[in-house]
Image (cartoon, rainbow, N blue to C red; front, top):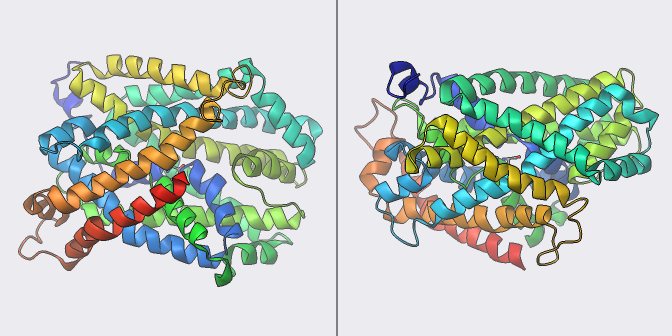
Length: 454
Ligand code: TRP
């Protein structure tokens, strides 16, 4: 198909409002919601943490998502082209560079973890070799990640699926797949939650997550709630700006930003409702991150009726949540390569896939043959995570919000944020968003940034 044909042109925009929501929520909902949020909340004061988290989502999350949307839709360009078109000189245009770098680095380590979900799907079928204790599952996890060919095959398989979706374009690739995967994800998640509420440890699990303990709110907890907000909402890397460049003029930006932020938070809470009753029913210690997902939960699945089925469903859930996130990460660099290097989408995907595959292979091998190679005391896998989560995302978010708050012409902002047909008066919420972008967000991010580095 020729690039100028009407079909090709329509494939450069999202088609429906639901598609826009499915894709942006799909970007936000990922491993961070299922592996990280429940544990952070439970261990940092339960409902008290939730309260602080929701405050940040509203006060900072929604404004920064709006800022990214404005940058993307007002220019309809990739992240570098967008800053150029808005005449953002140095240092305002920093997010273009940090966003592109972050989108490559995050793909490196995120796709390795996403690849693990494929292996665990296979493990679910085979019943984890009959093992049900966390200590043995821990050894099994280590043995798997330390076997180079196994983790390489899984990572490469995941990347293949990811790039196949991306190569099909916006409407036929990203939107179509998000439209299928997001509703499925919600159905599976709800099935888990309902089942969870009938478990013997339901009360204890829910109180771990929801009983407020305000004495646990320390400055450290506040900072980790803020860090979690950025990571979970995928802001600060130009991902949402890139998606917004494919929105049509009628997409209401503030509403889309709010729906994205609220849905992401609901999914995180549902993940907690799914996980903790089960953990407490079996008297297992809640763990963080990969250990929760790849050791604690499998040990529970091995002890419940129809465990293989639940386990399969869980890793399908995790796989889909990861895939809708990685396609949005790769789209940042794909759209950059297409527009700036003037390549066709297919060629851009090949170039991108080569770069990402090299990074992902290094990350995958940093659990085995490359585990001895450390930079600043970290393996390449940990270093990429650190650079993206603690440096590039906060830095990008800070400059994006400061640029839109202080430098961008108010006329552009107002036109983008005012829904069609309401242009007579500037709605009040726009002033609130601008206030947050000018003062609240940059100061808060600066603090996370500094404390994150300490
Ligand atoms: N929000 C994703 C999650 O919760 C992680 C993430 C961080 C992300 N930055 C991103 C996803 C950029 C897509 C694009 O797992």
